[in-house]
Amino acid sequence: MSKNDIAPPARRARGQLESEVLGALWAASGPASAATVRQEVDGDPAYTTVLTILTRLHEKGLVTRERAGRGYLYTPVRDEAGHTAAGMRALLEKGGDRAATLARFVSELPAEDERLLEQLLRGDVGS
Image 1 (cartoon, one colour):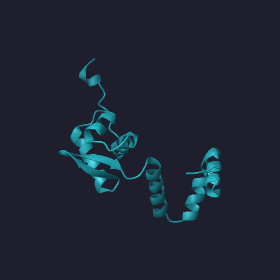
Image 2: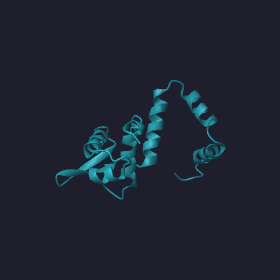
Image 3: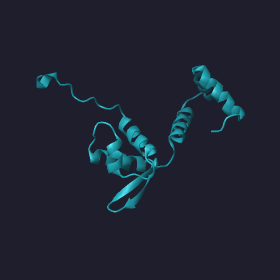
Image 4: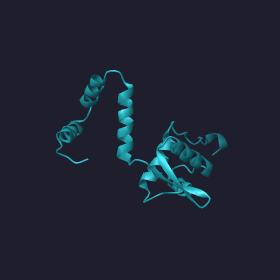
């Protein structure tokens, strides 16, 4: 196999590494170092790349950090469900017609999710 036959590694979509870093933090049993996060992220990113992502997440207010020796330990501010809900809320607030947006969202849900949403709105299911 020649050098030209080897495909270059696929680039991550924009924001994908940030999502993977958050996922590693959510999966951790507690605060995690950049080195620990790096071990859990696919594709063997450079330590400095993971550190840059963690710094950006901290600047965005998505993670907290506490000094641990010469480095930091990082903790997500919200759990995964809270993060997703905040993103959905932000998108809803950006849109124009909230009623139309919500109606379209609900109309495109699978029947099982629509029933779950109805139960949640009635208070029949805990969150």
